[in-house]
Length: 142
Image (spheres, rainbow, N blue to C red):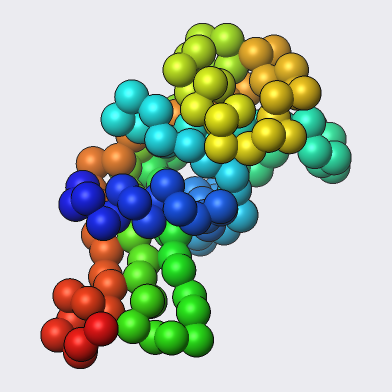
């Protein structure tokens, strides 16, 4: 990963996680995330959910492939950039299995400090490919 890509991932507040649904189509959901130990952590937090196992968790259990897209859009197009991580994901039964990830998530998102993430599932995204674009690299100035 290039330094600017890592900076973009640190600066952005959310990304779009794509997993593969049972019918083979991509299924996208916005997620909060944190970088930890060369991977990306995505908590299954305490925000209200419909109940049952989330589609992203079912999808990863069936097919671990994922893509995470993080972008920066501004009216000053010279600041446009995006990064896409691709690889394999797994869901840990309990966040307590990955303490460094919980610490990173709580540093990044203060609301997580009051949540019992140790007892909830936690997704670990292991990127094997990083693709990105930014205006500055396109030779368009800025």
